[in-house]
Image (cartoon, rainbow, N blue to C red; front, side, top):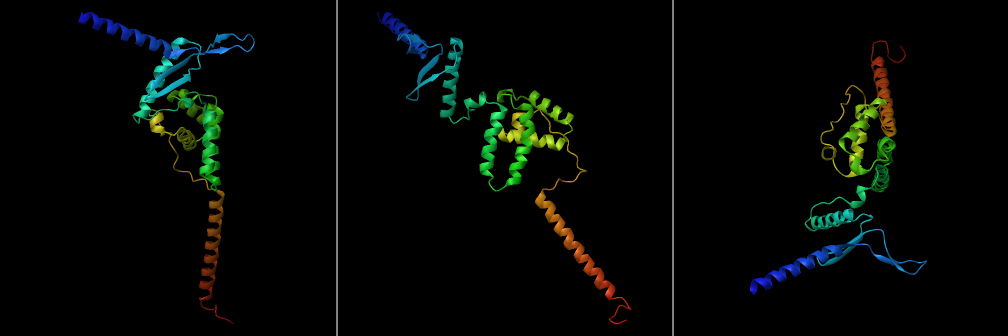
Length: 235
């Protein structure tokens, strides 16, 4: 008798678990505004409890196989968050590079107010990234995509240093180091026999320094000439 009752209890538990799993994904009903009848939505939703809270969200799909996987992934995502494990934002999975650059540039301008040269530098580096990779989705930015970008920019005549700065700025926009995002993509060689391009303020400062140096040299030469024999007043 005891074994029979135990077996029956296990079967009831399994049946309840099956019903629970079945109700975890569903297509909600809504009233048709034209006929007034209740009809099922084509889009699947999932619903479950986690840490005492009810989670009910649209899977944004019409396929049942996908909504089941979406529910599992959402549970795993919440478990990681609760455990303090970093989780990629779901909206980033479908964001394009152009979307990323737009939001990054807005944040950068706000965080660097009054530093126009830094803002112009960032925009300049990302302009070519947006031109060539703007339509790509973030999950598609694999190492091969970055290599293709580098080859294209080098073929356009960009220097290795310029390409490194552009890809580096893209990695900062994503929020992770180059070495983490694309560990097998090597940085380009940079020429060491070229001078640094000066900003306008730096160029003006150098011009002033040269002018002061030239003026000081002229005064020194004039003083030296006056100290020579025959240079005395009235001679």
